[in-house]
Length: 85
Ligand SMILES: [Zn+2]
Image (cartoon, rainbow, N blue to C red; front, side, top):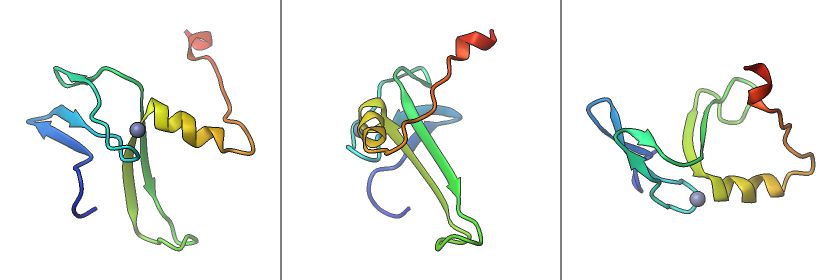
């Protein structure tokens, strides 16, 4: 992506800043750790798509994620990660 806010700013290998691509909010980052819920998307579009060979990355804050999934006709599948511990 050219222009606009960077997805993530790094200082060395540490994440310094993360922005929600949807609302532009800067997320809370402390010592390289994102201190809030973030939806990280990384999709490589394949041959049968209209974006063959393109890779898309974006981050979304929990609020924007909630707004996105609210519009789904079929709700997201929810599973408790704690069941497998
Ligand atoms: Zn957001």
